[in-house]
Image (cartoon, rainbow over all chains, first blue to last red; front, side, top):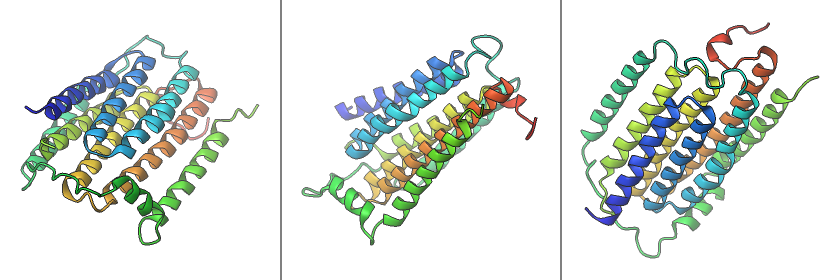
Length: 169
Length: 103
């Protein structure tokens, strides 16, 4: 066991335990806070994977914006089912069975692929992945069109969200 | 980097399944969206892991993950706005009870 492996296993345990709390805890504010723990664990995984930009974006956008949006939405709609009545549907065991089957199928499919036990080669020295990512996002030979489409989608979604959520009275 | 690729894949499969369970079993619409977020994160782990293990010189994996980020942000904004709007009119956030297009 190398230190990186130990960090990975600790992180994986944090992610999976927090994810289970997200889907089972009764109090939705707590579920949103457990989601923050999951997102933070995923950010650590990105850092282990040498994806520094993704790690920062995970913290800034997911934890800083999306999780806070969830907490606000929970607080705005909370009165109705606060801590009373069952939070899970009647057929939840069927959902659990289906989720287990999906996990078994996915894990079997992925683990039996050839070359799946490889470890990563070191990043070639002098390769500036952050700079290459920035160039790829705005270069016409790279991904400038998907990038612009994503920004228009985001703009349209935010205007639509304001229009839908605004009180008409 | 002494971690086999399969560890990431199994972790993200587990996270995806937990999210799927949340989506299928929760009553509260906001909790369903929380499950969708878990599933999107599982996909992103896979994308970044494949980028790192297969070809770190090409940036396609990370660019794809960033597009997933943007779509996730758009989805959460519109989804939560819809839930808040439904809550204003119907006083409910339980997905089962929202089964009419017009009230």
